[in-house]
Length: 277
Length: 312
Image 1 (cartoon, one colour):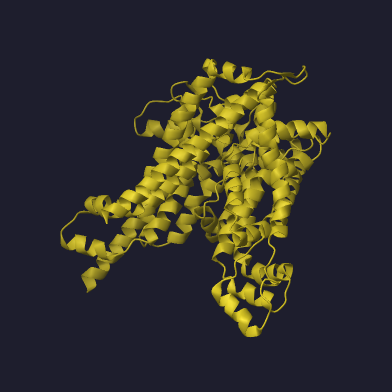
Image 2: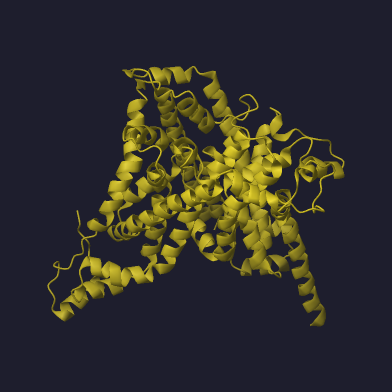
């Protein structure tokens, strides 16, 4: 009995180290990203490279906010992602419910094809439309075009979710005289809460990360964070410290969300919610 | 249109309660309408408009004229377009195969039991969710031929300095390295879902028969997770074919046009040269390439399931 136990313990330890090797590229990358963001230019240009510098350059972070309007861009990102996600939930959750109950496979097909379409092919016509409507220069074009990403994600996840929730309760409620809206609002919606959380998290992440819509539609005042960090590359002397600091600031909210909502993200992604755009 | 069949049990309940059937048939269309309007405006309208623009000749700031199929004919003879097709093909194939192998390996590891498994899995999933542009910028610094950390790491194991994204012949593999780093976790998650459904018994009898680890994987695990691998291939192919952020942020299609995929060429045509008509034609062709690709993959998937059934 005892040798068998130790054998198992050894197995577990062995697997632990194999797993550590497997994820080492991830750990190395993020450690190096943090290291780059905390070093002065001299240390970032040193050969052989320095991992932990003698003087830590917290000033890189201050520089990002001072010199690049980063607070404004942060706020833009929050507005665009927030509005596009909330609108998508308001529109997409009932739609997912309706499509699941109607078994409307054609509607589901449109959503599927929309997810496969490259974001750029939406961009040409919508860009012209926004220009014609004189909306460029405001955040509206980006909020509207981010719906291309968020609405299909929400609808797709909610179809899958409502298909698994039991119909019996809803039928009982409607027999008792509830209207379809009441059935949805009071019976279906509360059960679907976990699905809504999954849809919300994925919509936030994919909208936050979106870059391609921003580079075309954003003007100087309406940039979102991914566009702002990219522009740091092209517009000034490339200094690695502040650039890495900015990259970390952009992606940190998403990484924190990933760590805390791992279960929901895994559930959503394995349900086939691929990134849109 | 809004007919909803009431299931037998519900009908019986109705009869028991003495309610009038049909009166209660719920109308679900109002739930779908707002989404249909939005999807019509931001998804279907652009499709139709792109199709219309593709038969027009129009560079922004110049006059728009009907051009028939001119744009498509021009596309067929455009060497740069065919090159970008080839780059897309190579990029996609590599970006599917590498994550597929590594992701399956990772899934086999994470299917076992070991300390901190949940936490380590969380770390492993992080690249997939991280902002692609931010990731790309840091990789660009790591790829730097003189100051980058990667060449330093290679020198530690005695491998000479590489030029990574700064050389025409290594740029695509270097970009694929980033793509693989980012998307291997997705394959891992999908395969992990497949492994969870794999039964224990066949392995026990295989062990009695003296099968080694490779044989168990090859003849037991692999056939059982094949449908999940196929889902992984489909999702990964569709994503890789339209990959934009990483390529654009790191190389913008360069050096020269060595890493210019269809998506990048499309972007340059429409938003650098503002050749809207030609860009639209490219978008239409690209759209059908993706649809064709998905269709072929779905067919292969149907066949995988079929042969899987036959084996049993």
